[in-house]
Length: 169
Picture 1: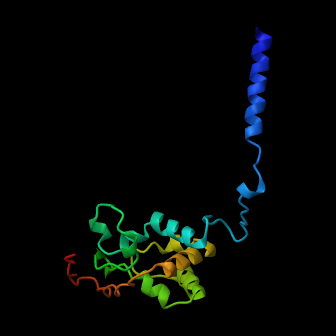
Picture 2 (picture 1 turned 60 degrees about the horizontal axis):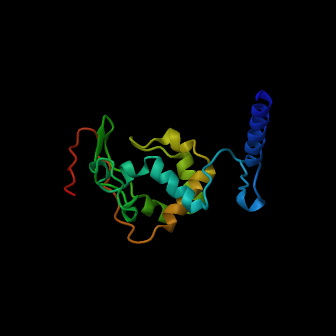
Picture 3 (picture 1 turned 60 degrees about the vertical axis):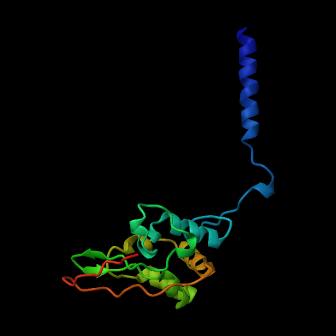
């Protein structure tokens, strides 16, 4: 009885081990991590979309996102900037229209901007500066691939003490 159980356990182990072997080359993904970690997706555009969707970019850079209670807005509205004010000791800032920013810059200029940028809160510059250049380029390529109206520039920042006008919609 013990011998049968041992043989059955051994056979199950070998079957499981065989299932863990790599498949054919068509089902494997080669990843070159030279230059540091980065998001890997079917394309750079898909990687950029993933980063934008998961990194909080819409929180400030998509119109009225803060008023949705976290509901994902239609992708056609993403990154058009927002009239929603962000007020603190620095004054009031607004999420820039990243579609217009990408349109006004080359890919290399975009990477430089995200690598050296510093502007008013709540932009998380330390996190953005630490993204890999691959991810910065993926975001740029995603934004450039977006179809439709690019929207209008966000309002200019206001100094501390100036009262912002709350958007109506």
